[in-house]
Length: 543
Ligand code: VG1
Ligand code: CO
Image (cartoon, rainbow, N blue to C red; front, side, top):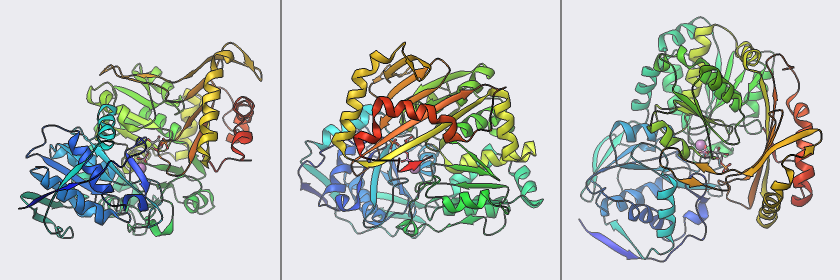
């Protein structure tokens, strides 16, 4: 086999964000761009010679090209084997599980998650470590540092591998094992959930819709929901992955999954509706006439997890990202278990999960997961909900209302301002950060501020510190305003404003969400002047 050493020049002008490198497809198509990134990853790792690397992606446009490059570069750098999903496909949680199950050294996940795909859309590459989770900041910092000085990459002079054929192939001297992308994952789900109980529920007429949004969960959901659990054919909508996600935006929110939402609010709604995103790690949960906020979903799942066989002995603790509502905190308090608040991004949960300190984690952005893998997992959340519905024999609406009556309700919303001018967004955050000390102890529209800071996380396991993770303003009544800049956007800046208000167990739980939060929305505008400074009269997306 011939290994070619190609000289190259540094390529990164900007640090990768919340989840790896995410850019326009046109940027990834630049000469040596993929090669430079993949080589920068390998140059930042040690001890992988002869070991196994997992590679898979969500099937978006350019997946097929990038994956062949990655295989040849892995071969030239001395990996012993690559495990790759048939057709180059693996969902993000699926890849996490394959890494763990096969004791791989790590993995490359090719995806830009919920960002749109196609020639004019986005692409992305993320490196995951041996525990199956996203590389911790120490490694992502090293990859970025390497990318600014890289001067060569190694690539095997070998033909492309036929990824359509399951079985053993070779790339140069390296073995390439093409595996079924769903098998391992489906098997894992059967160990966690009561499939028999869910089967009986479907057999007795329970109906659901799962919107795969033309993305990676199509094959996973079809196999598990329709083939294994006996849900009627057609339960899975938009179930065939397409390179441009059918021209859609694979983000399961109330804007892009509007058809599902409208169906679930209509008179002939099925019992349960759910959707996932481009790479299969997010979940949207909607009951008949009842949208469940991701923050509430996390709390409900944590409170009811022991109904599923995989969690029958209880959960060790819960972690949530800082902007996620404190609904789960009430559950942890009642159960007397640990509760952790981490920065945005799944990578911050890895240490807590590895140490057995927490079992269930979640983010307000429709991400929920557990210690079964080291990524958030859309279909897992759907299956846990199904298990709970089958056990409790109640509707989603009843379960959520009972939850509020027990723990109180955390009214919650997120307002996104997309593609804002970067300079305007940065100065807005900067100015607000500088003024934070003056708010503490003050009354803002009748609410007393108890703390105001830019969140700093101290990892209790490895002692590392992550600063400037988002502005938090907390009030005496449990309300919060949070503001941060997105780390996953590819054009301009995305400003996210998160608002939360706590209503105790005996309080009013039937208010309209935006109306319930209007006083806090007004306070946020008065202190941050978001609309004035961004020139936007309204958010781009309200969740
Ligand atoms: C967003 C979400 C965050 C999530 C991240 C990756 O990040 O807010 O909670 O972890 O996307 O999700 P940001 O920095 O844009 O707010 V995914 O589905 O891309 O893997
Ligand atoms: Co995703």
